[in-house]
Length: 451
Image (cartoon, rainbow, N blue to C red; front, top):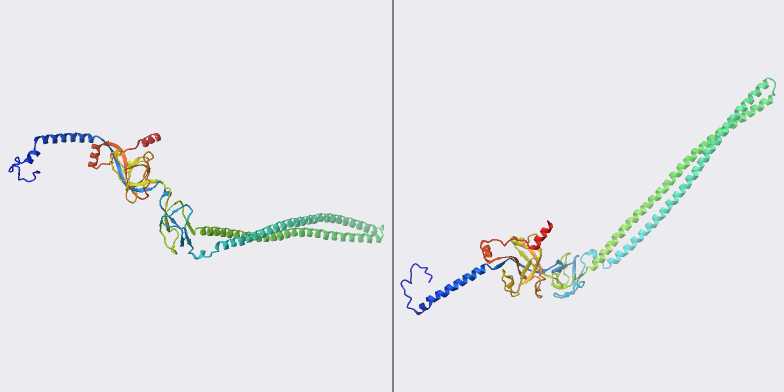
């Protein structure tokens, strides 16, 4: 009787006369019940002091340990049109196997002989380069010949200048001799004239001396003309040197100008050849991209672009593939409050979806159906779901994970922390306190060594 009502029934109704009342409200039943309560209280008190492992739970899913082992899509680096499929969904392919064949949709690549014709353009331009190179060599030889000829012509003109200068010196000496001769002839004529006046010389002697004086004066004038002619020849030789220099400078400059023009045309042709070779290589590689091949061994999951004749852009996903060789891992998420409790190398218990399990989160030793994991990566930036991502690898010290689990299936994780008494854990849960913050022993030792 709960005695909730204010009207007490047991005072007005006598139950002692009933047989069931005698069996229930017997004194020995109270004794047994009291013993049970005492034993239960003792057991409960003992249980409160048993160790309890604090833990952080998380929800995640199966993934692979390295990014290159995860499911991926295959894209085409060029736009195109689907022409033929070589696989079906679920087929196993090896690296390099052809998955589908595509065709071109851009009009500048429609020519089926585009590669061959580009190669012919390269040959033609290469021949032009060789022709310009031959012209440059010929002009270089011409410049060399003109330089040698200029050297000889200048040497000849300098010799002529030297000869003219020597002739000037010779004529100058002859002029001085002529001046001396005319002085002598003048004195002889004056002496003879004086002697003739005195009657010592005949008139014929005077006339002879006058004739000789006139001849000497003529020779002096002739010698002066020779000297002026020699000096003029010196000037002409100097002018000739300048003329030769100017003439050959003009010829050599014109040849050099033609050579530089040919070199410019040669370099331009070489640039065009390089550009054509680049286009030739690009066309060859583009032709090889018409066959979409498997990047690694795996299974075809889904044809994202289906049918024949369907067009797509560059970078569009065509087909999904799952690598056949991979190392399993679990990607789980923890609350920001629990992130400081997660450290690299810590042990974690994992429950896979679809596998029967009996879990005692505080007593991992008596749990059944869970598998061991180890923290290998902790994300330092929060995810879109407001939690932090933690990557778990199989624990090498625990029994191996099941072989039939698949990437993408769910998994529940339990990260094991410090051992505390049960009464402390109950008190923490009732007050809403977080688990004890701590550092693993390995981390503490590492920090001590760094100091």
